[in-house]
Image (cartoon, rainbow, N blue to C red; front, side, top):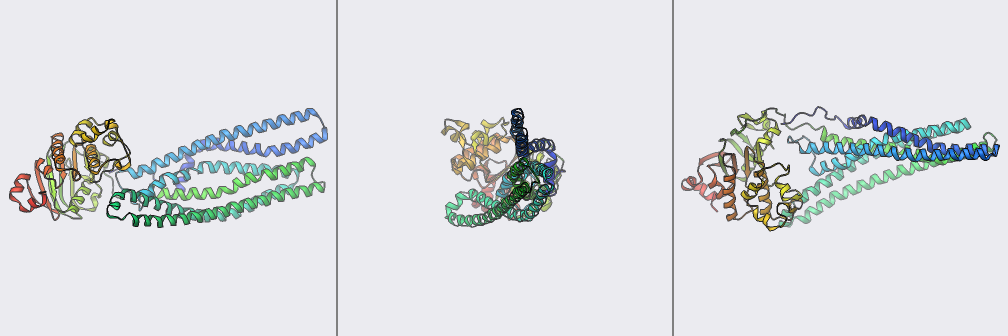
Length: 566
């Protein structure tokens, strides 16, 4: 199976801590630079107040020049610290989001399924939006600290002018954060629900795209679209709810910040009228009252972003912390070994027993399609070995003892409905770019006519899910991919159901020739493939009922003749 993940996150909070711990260096530099930026921003109104105070007292051109130079230094510091601070933080944010996207995608691509009740569309949303929102914590924490720095500097500067002004800023900030922290919890719960509904809508879209052709075939597309509209409407309503809650939060934060700024301004004016502070200190207080709204706004918005990041991290934990469906194995099969099914009972299978010797070409004629599907699922490890009776052995070892990665290299089960990817014919046949048998696979699968149709040849562009190919072309492309893999053991299920009889005959000969001396099992009802096999196993009512060559079975078994004759 696969190696256990010893670094599996336990919860959303663990994911956030991991993200923070991995980016301590970038966050430290970002916090330093953004703190310098906020300190420079705060110093600007303080410097203006001092300039006014000294200019009115000394009336010296030299003092004015020094003041202008000081302002230039402050402006330069603010500009450079913001530029480089945000560059560092955004690079760390983007990198961290990439790490989580890759990790979530890796979970979805692992050969051992995870015990999580999520569809592919939901996993896609988690791997994109939730990964990005979780990584935002890398920027949130430094901006929170730098905003706190600005508030503290402003409070200290105002406190030096008059203690009451400093206390007003501190008490007002605490009061604002207390109110907003309560409101942010509502945003967190609403956001979690919104993300879940949007993910369900995404999963519905993925299902519709996969089933679009058959839906059009029997006229069910309108009902399917209505179903999607209902799910999308639910997601829209929840998004409106989140927007409403966020709007109330932002409006409340802005109003409270404005009230505090007005209170500082009025208090400073009152103190100036009473002669407790000078004109320069009044200018400083008014400037700080105007400036402080920005860091306070940023500071007050941080709880909301923290709650959103935590909600996204908890959704990622659903995928990353999900245990594997089956316990991993560690062994590897022997090269060129047999394929043996010994007493397997699963679904429609009832104590199935057969053996395919190394280098043999065997066909299974399954009278019931469900039995064929169940047999292919067992061999493909889509069914965990500990959930069915009996044993499947590859190279003399039980599947339960083998690492899935090793099984995949040794045993390939080509799915009945193999996916076609956006790219080219070549990239679909040889995704890794390492196969040495692409020309032979193209010829054996009779994909040659598709290649010849286009002047680009194997570099002909294929649309997502093979939308610009016919059903038969997609099936032959999938077969070519399986043959190009050149695995020790190849299992094909109904590889020629969408092609005409002549092409089917040529494919049967091509597969038999290309797979000579390689172990091959074909689950099919195709007379051409059955005739090309060394022997045929008849699978009826979940058990193997007969075994012989195709021609002998045609001559001696009437039920077989009726089942496979077209």
